[in-house]
Length: 211
Image (cartoon, rainbow, N blue to C red):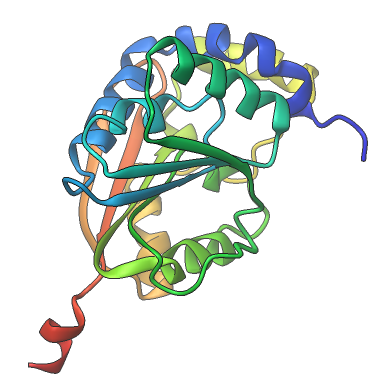
């Protein structure tokens, strides 16, 4: 398999994210804050692992995954520098996860749904591995709310091979989950040059459903 766009830019990914530093740092902090204490966390499409790294001090165990091995290698080095011992790394396709139903108390996939032809399939698979009583965190760039400066930078990014499939706004992102019948308990907007919509989906506990 040839090198993907994400493989090629892995070394520059953190630098590119720094252009939108306020939103990216806010996203990592807010996502980590919503991970239930001492839970097992799965992050898919983790890139260089900022959310996994932010959540590791609070989680029992973190499985940081991405399809791009160069991205994962950078995430692994960052974790080593921070001396984090409860984080593992593995290559995963978020459309076809090998884990059983309800395997994780917390699941996260950040800034990926707007890149996918079939984001509903990804959301369904991530929901499948979320445990009853657990939480699914889906922070996604609200590309439909990008300002003029960010639109120009995104255009330059596209010259390198970047492709966005969905221009979500806060309203259309909420509507996306409503169409899927998935329960959004919170949709927080994290400000920045390119804002992030953090969708929080809490899976009902089996005992709650049975009452």
